[in-house]
Image (cartoon, rainbow, N blue to C red; front, side, top):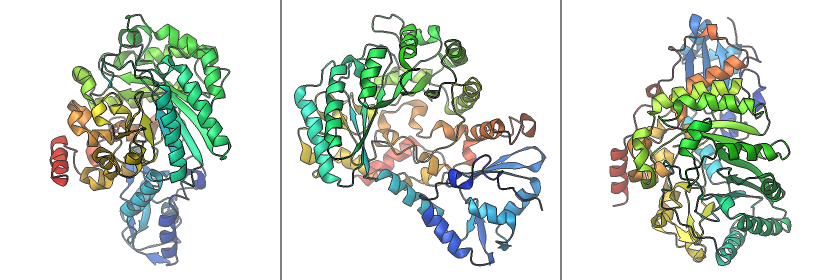
Length: 520
């Protein structure tokens, strides 16, 4: 019997790097207790994803352990018969057990995922405060989920004081707090940089006396992030920024232009080149994709290479579909790409971006769905002092959960909407609960559940692009790490089938009926 060798199990990484052993300790403890039996009844993990290769071989990925291995055809046959009684002294079985591909029949994997999810979502050692100095923007993007009619109100000194008071309240509420993450958001936050500087200085000063770690990130269109501003932000803890380019110059300028209709591409690229080589601020370069620009994204990659922006440690690009997720962007619903088509496009673009030094190899992360909206002590404050839970709601006052001027309501007499965010749980949804990528996805976007009635078209499907491209992404990683070649698989045969990952399809109308019944 040809067994999987140690370095092939998990491809290139040692076992302790591939597995989050601390987080999965409860499961491995149960497994190890039962490994004392030489023979035991085993089962294949419900989170295994098999990707068939030529010659009967397969890549095997487990979304819970995040283990990855290459099995020969005879080893696949052993996995197929794993419910038979196998000795743990069998080398292959022992290795499959060690990475969570097979388990004793008594292990409840869903309970393990739930425990890990809860630990991540309810970790009170770190909080994120998102601040919108203004909701105004100097761009006129037709797909903006905040809509075109944005408030131009500037955050007052009183609201800034309220944010500091909110943070002090969090310090009282969370004695074990060790990390504060602030996110500067808008609108375009750099329309009001002085507010950012002032609040950052006050938060940093508060943290110094308490030995609390501080780091900041920002969502910006990049048009005002010059070297001078980057230096001031870096000195105030900024370590990452999301900047968007929606294609090469022509495509980008046709959709992400100034309010005057003037193009912004050259300004953004020029600004980045002023500081990106000097300050280690991580740039997450986002590309929003719909039917109008999908064919020009590779030209953007070529242009960035020509500009000297490839193979930098602090610039990586990623891709996102344009979706009609709020009332503010329903006008572009007919421009969206179908999810299956987008998943295939994204995996192709990731390959091209990696080959050109502009993206890392993809690998499914844990719990993409755990964001500030679901973490009970993360808050978003807009210019008038209203508090929100989700980035997608900041331009809609009726979706506020409270105010910095009504502090007790945020912590005690919580509003019905705040309670709805807190009560949302992916394990209550049958579609999510049955899905093989639940440990990676965890419902992905709670906004699409809590405000499901605002979504239009396929934006109503909360599933991430991973559900439509996971096979291609795993193949890409294995291929580029040298464990398989293009001769080992047929592109058509390995294509992701979302119906193989989930036992049912999410239906918005059914979900809305269930929610209405639950709250009636």
